[in-house]
Length: 332
Ligand code: NAD
Image (cartoon, rainbow, N blue to C red):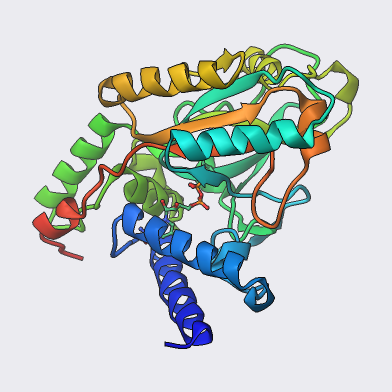
């Protein structure tokens, strides 16, 4: 087969999977299969860089927002994360970071479980929650303000003082395992659609046009970063981890398993530890996110098309099967 044809086939297939996953919240293949095709496309594009097109799935984040919701422009784009699938590719990533930061001998890492839900942006003005949005295609998301207001552990007002007049935070909305089990139980009893996994249940619940339905769903959120900040910038910590602690003081829920690692070996130990406790957590995670902790170094490293150069999602070995999808009877 011609290279152009192979590329077109992979791109079409991935675009279909993206549509099912991001727009319909209803994937038809396991994430591992999606990741396998994406890696194949990346490898081909690396071999034939002249054939990379700006509309390739390797260059894009998520999917365009659905018009039924209002649109929100992300002043600071909401990007994805590059993946590492094993210790070797994590080590190669860590080496690239050190190579780029030539004169820096020590890099501290903030390690956070990779929560398996969906990314949202939340804007607080003078301490009040005024807007919630999905990531969408990274530049434009969907306005889901009334829906995010129903998330039980999300504060509608910030606590304390010293927060910026305009503070956008980003986090992952998810469903706990117990919440997911009881939602599916109740859906089944009512003869309604059963969800494939907690991630899809969370995404489907948050992107409801009727917020009364969202309010009945057991959604939770953990915040993992700041986006746009205006006012009091000088009071912000210079470390990502410390900024998370500031967010906690202002009332934001954080993932309790977040911590610091001093070097690559520290990240590896963190990864092993999180993998060991993975099944005992009451929410699903699919890897460990390692972020350069120093904000100034993050800025120096910058971004590529769809992901920052200062962070990586080190995925756990594939565990998810489509068994849930195949086993359950769908009643829509
Ligand atoms: P991603 O999920 O691999 O990584 C980026 C996302 O990680 C962020 O947007 C954020 O939502 C999330 N995240 C969780 N914890 C985080 C933390 N502590 N800090 C920062 N971000 C955190 O990338 P993506 O672009 O959202 O999705 C791509 C992945 O989605 C694929 O690798 C695949 O696993 C899955 N997918 C599956 C299908 C399918 O058909 N099965 C289709 C599309 C995508």
